Image 1: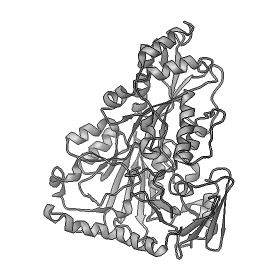
Image 2: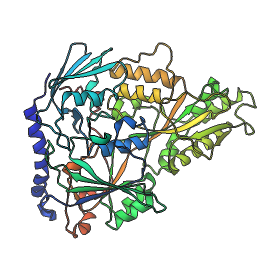
Image 3: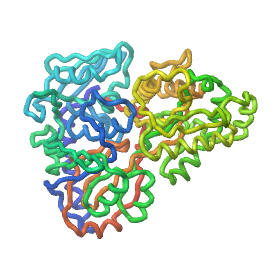
Image 4: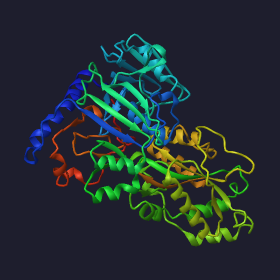
Length: 523
């Protein structure tokens, strides 16, 4: 099947017109006309961000923040809209063979990078090849891009519409340039104790999809949670990353907070190379001791969900079939069958924190408390160790337990599971079908992995974004992508008084109407 360029051009223009239509719908509340101009001010926690997709480490919170901002500079070949339908971006149409091994994309004509150089098929192939999984080759000839896969790739569109698969070019000096609505105009860093980094992005006047409403975006990175909240309250920031523990406070003060679908999962990995980790009964006892509901509802103040699967429900469609109940009695029974010196109070299991922030420490401490209730000694290591992608578990006397945070990267459940297991160095059980992209096949695969009890999801939580009273036409993707080219700023100071009465002033949780994997959406 094919998707036409004309339809996409119309849809792109329509996205701009949607903002104009809000005038009619919001006349009663005194809303102003959409306007061009102004600077959108954004504050984020992460400081070590990169606009180069080749440097991102899969699943990390840093890479997720980098991807969110890279979407301001770069485009992908295709995109998934909020209704679960694939739409053209740099590709105007596409097709594939009967086995989904060969995919061909035709580039949109007349697209230029922000440095005014033309986009070519060779540029696309050079950008994608270093990012694609092994077994996939990409080539560019004329105006066509061809993907050849060694195995069926029915989820190629999900792959290309998410994660690091942006199209970029290389300018003089090795700087990456994109075709997106903004480009980097200025970079600076402070010498204060906060060590913040500041970027200024300017509007790309010649962007193929149309000029964004705002003239510029000012990014301030590396700011702590309370500082971001204060700047937001004082009107010094228009968009901020809100820490989960501060969401309730923001809600009580009638501030606008948007929540994505649950995209971050905190999970526990057991290193089976360690003597204690190789004991199946001990692993089962640990799994039964975890009180996920308390972590989600008490520790995280109901701003998270108990998680029993690696893939969240909105992505896989089957997470509800897995059990998340605690069985402390069963955990104690299993503990009683083990040698008294194994995972005891004087020889505890060491739990290494491999996720940044205070939240990870709180989750780790709760895991230790739950384990001790079952008679399993766990000691949380005070000095966190930064995880590196695709590493092999340590041998000898290293930590047996590892707490990590994983951010959803791909809109393909199969590819997401592939990436997570590879990054965590998890060996799949013999006989597991790792090639099937069908939902039932992915379900059976994850069920077999979870039965090994070497990795335990604990909680999943959304990303929370604080939205200033002057921000209009905020229409992000449920899975967390920001569409800032469509945002415009209302400079009227009276908007602050209207915020408490506006329908969108409440904390909202947005969920996709359909799982990207199960939607069956094809071009």
